[in-house]
Length: 402
Image (tube, rainbow, N blue to C red; front, side, top):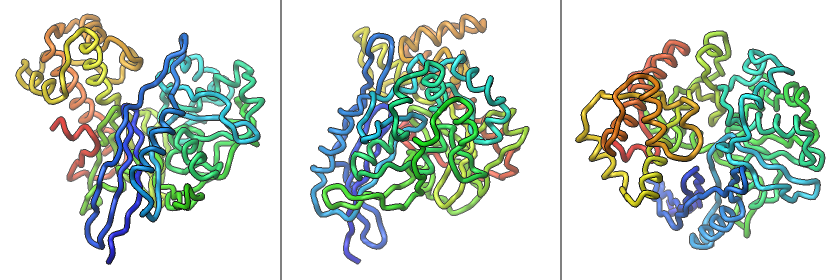
C-alpha cells in the first residue's frame, strides 16, 4: 500500500505542533514540521488566548507540511469557548480557562437557576470553575452585549475548525468538556443553557469524530476526537479492556473507558466526569491539576535567573529526601499562574508540614503529590465503574518524567 499522508494539528495549553503523519499499511510515521509556544495575553486583569497568533502558527505549519496530503485534523485543550457574530466574525478574544473571572459566584449563578445535582444529572461532567458553562454564566449575569450579538457558540477547537473549513459546528468529544452536553438526549443541554439565559439559537450542529466538515486549500478537513485527551485515549496501545489511562501534561486526566456514562449519586459525590470518546464511548475520568505545578515552578525560577530544563528538575527531585511534604494538586491555590514554589510552601506551612526550600525538595513535593493523587483517584474510579484495572497506560508529554 502506498504511504498516505495527513496533517495533525495538536494544540496544548503550553505549546502547539503541526505534524505530518504517514501510514504505509502497517506502521504510522510521524514527522513534526512545526512547533510553537502557546502564550496567553493579559490585558488589564483578564487573561486571553492569543487565537490569531495560534491561527498564524497553524497555517504556517500546514504550509510547511506541503500539498501532498489526504486530510487534516485539529485537536486542542478543552473547556473554552468562542462566540461568532451573525456574519461569522469572532466577537472577542476567547478568555483563558485560568482567567480569574470564573469564580464560585459564576457557579452559584448557575446553581440558583438549576440545582447542582440536576446539572450533573444532565451533563455527567465534573464540577470545575474552569468549565465553559461558567464563562457563559458570567456573560449572562452581566447582560453582556456579546450574547446579544452572538450568532454562533463554538468550542475553542471548533473556532479553528471553522476558520479552516467554514463549518460552524461543534465536535462531540470537545463539546462534552464544556459541561453543556446532555449525553442522554445526545444533544446540547438546552434546559440548563436556557435557564441561565443563553440564547438557544446560537447552538450549532454537533458532529462526531471522522466527519468531513469542509476543505482548506483543497485539503479535506476531518474532525478527529477534537479534545486532545479523546485523541490520546483512542491511541492507547492496549490489548485488553481492563486498563486505565493517565493522559499526563499540563493537566492530568486519569480514567477508564466505558460504553455508557456513569451518572449516579456515587459519581456525583466523587465529582468525576463523563467525557465523550470515539465511537460513542465515554471516558469516566477525573481531572487532576497535573504538571502545571512543575511548569509554573520552572517559570518562576526562570524569572529569578535560574534556568532549568525538566530533566534537571527531575534529577534534583530524585536526589531530594522522599515523602517529606505533600500538597493537594487540586487545591484552588494552585490554579492561577504565578509563584508556584511560594504557594507550595504556603500550603505546607498552612498544613503544618516541613516547608520545602530547595529546588529538589519543591519538585519532589510536586511529583510525589501527583503520584499519590493518581492512586487515590484510580481507586475511586475502579469502585465507581466496577471496571477491573490490570494495567495503567501513561500517555502525553508527562511520560518524559518517568
